[in-house]
Length: 265
Image (cartoon, rainbow, N blue to C red; front, top):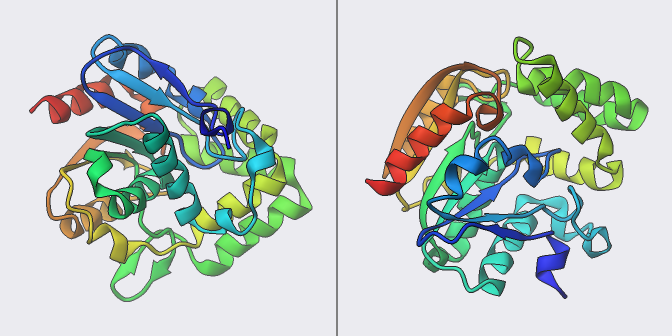
C-alpha cells in the first residue's frame, strides 16, 4: 500500500518543527490554504486527505475500518510512520482534533503538541452532565437526509458549519466540498463524526494542548470548549471572537498567532 498516494500526502516547507494539518468532516487539505502561507516559511507542513476525501485513493476505502474514528486515526499514525516523522505538532480541525487525540493515545511517541480548532468530543446531548448541542433524533434525521436529498443536506449543513454571517463564497465552497464527496464515503465519516462519544479519550491525552474555540459556533459551543479544557490536564483554552466552526478559514491570522505562540513557548 502506497500510503503517500492513498492519503494524497504533500509536504511543504523545510522548517525544523513539523506541523501536521488535519482537515474536518466533508473537507480536504485545501481548506488550510489561508493558514498555510503563514506557516510554511517557519515549519515543515504535512498536508493530507483522509481516505474517501479530497484526492485520496478511494480504492483503499474499507467500510469496516472507517466506521469509527479509530480508522481515521490509523491513517494519521501510518502517515507519520511512513514519513518517519517525530515530535509532530498536530493541528486538527473539528473531528480531527479527536482523531488526533486517538492517534496520540495509540502512538504517543510520534507527537509533541496538540492543537485543536473548534473541537468537540461528543456532539450529542448526554444529560444531565454534558450538552454537545444536538439531540440524537436530530442527528439521525440529518444523516437520513443524506440518502433522501444529498444536495439539500449539503445546502443545509454548509451555512450551519461555516456560520451564516461569514462570506457567501466560503459557505458555497464548503457546500461544494460536501457535494463533491461521494456519499459512499461521506456517510460513514458523518456517522463516525456525529455519533462518537470520546469524552473518556480526551481525559487520557497527556500532551500540551491548545484549544481554539469560536465564540459563536453552531456545532461546538464555548461550553464544550470549557469542558475539554477541564478534562485535558495540560491544556490552554483560547476563545476567538468569531462566528462559525471554521476558524482556520474565517480567522486565519488570529489562528496563526495563537498557534505560533503556543508552539514556540
